[in-house]
Image (cartoon, rainbow, N blue to C red; front, side, top):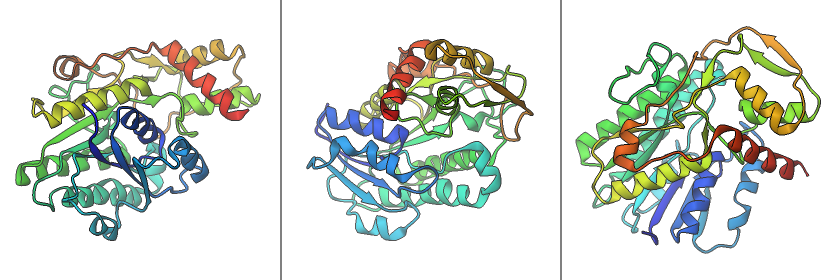
Length: 324
């Protein structure tokens, strides 16, 4: 299906802009809301939207999701088919320093979006981008939506879990159709510069040492952006078709890669060796993430396709082109 009218928060960021490309390519009309904050260079986020400049099917609103004036300016009865709520304050380590900011944006901003989604004559279906950070460190991987007990170890993870509870509460009280998607360590073209694959690749190319926290055995379920986008679109269609059986789904690769394996893969793709600076494990970091995809495969038709080495090569091609 195509030709839908979508409100996309966080549409200028890494995940949001890749999702925007896919929505526009299939014929949707998309209104992007993004505050272009300085977590990283706002010019990078504007560049993510460059391909859609002048496109009448794409509108961009520069605004904060915590600003009630933004939501009051949007007519909830203007034919919206769905709200894709991707906007968030991201990053585990910065959340330790600014916990109130994370609560304000990730919890308060989500509450504002939910209020708007239920303010019209009929609730607007709501897809919420959550995180594997909600699982914390106390579960045995792979983490399943129904079997693992969420126990976040950072303000970021806690803010995402609190937002999930808000989404479920609104659904219960207002009959709001919802889907909560827990993303596992997304990477690929346009990845944020502070994330490990981007940061390590850039530093190795520049001949600079890379900071390696812990002994290299910590592991992540790295998921290519194209698989995440496919999972979101599949979820959206099932949500709008009324066929979702559960509110929460994992989107990952079903493959946990250690930190040392990740560095070795980047070295192989770049054809260069890394200079490593070993540092202690950081507060808020978890030992491992790994998505159980049983529910997502069965109910979303979700099937990640990008192998890790191929995904890193895809990212490096983008990085070299962007630097040139």
